[in-house]
Image (tube, rainbow, N blue to C red):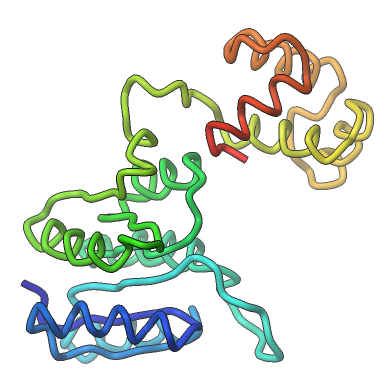
Length: 221
């Protein structure tokens, strides 16, 4: 079981719930922070002092305030920490249930567990802590399909961005201009048309509106 845990969440009420779960599991060496930057610095210092944290439990969404931050979200924090300290176990505890985000964090960035906040959130958090301590992955049931080989999720971040812009009411010409302004490629109108047609076929969508509805139902945007 874990001996040294860091909890990163900007809501004190959430932290208290997490602390109660850790206490029930006899995990008493727990520190708390409310900013992603503070979490990063604490973990970095602990490694340098040769008393590293065993586990980080972090939210993904942090409210912006007067304090300027290097890490704008828990997702950015997780990605950086997994790059620099791959041995650090990380559990995401978030209201965010978009399958694409879960899939990216768990698959690409090797997060150890993803727990959705909710009625069973604290129960599942305890289950996740136990699983991760045994070197097992854990995901809440409501987002488990993100890791299913059978789920129709063969879609890239670029595709997600296209459909998201489409859902915001942008025309294909406007999408092309937006991508060019952000230096995102491919950005030509023909490339966008081909990609959207491919997505419509892949998701068996009748038109652009139907495509947006399907992708939203899957929790991808």
